[in-house]
Length: 96
Image 1 (cartoon, rainbow, N blue to C red):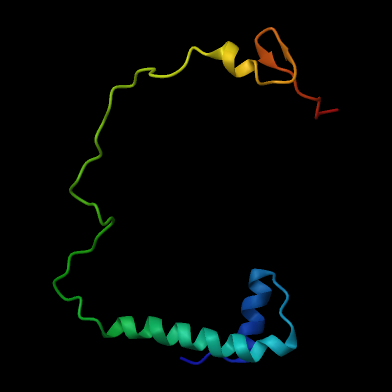
Image 2 (image 1 turned 90 degrees about the horizontal axis):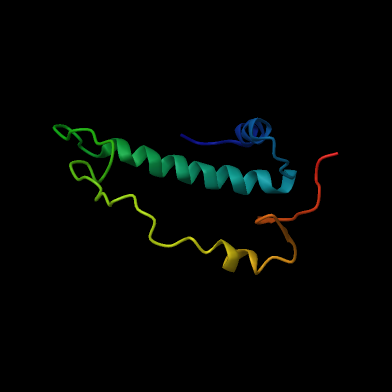
C-alpha cells in the first residue's frame, strides 16, 4: 500500500498536528515504507501458533510480605522542608 500526500494531510488533521507542504512528500514516503514493513508481517506463517497475551505467560510474580521496612522517619523528612506545621509541609496556597 502506498501512502500519498492527501492521506498524510488526513492523518495530520486527525492527529491535530500541523505539517508544512514541504514535508508532505517525505512523510508520505516514510509512512509508505512503514506500511510496507507491516505488510511483510502478513507473510509470516503463524499457523498452529497459539495467541499470546504476554511474553511471560505461565510465570507468576514473586510475592513478598507487605511490611514496613523503611519509614518512621517523619522528623528527618520534615527537617528538609523550609517550613513545617503540625508535622506537615507548609506550601503556598494554589486555590483561590
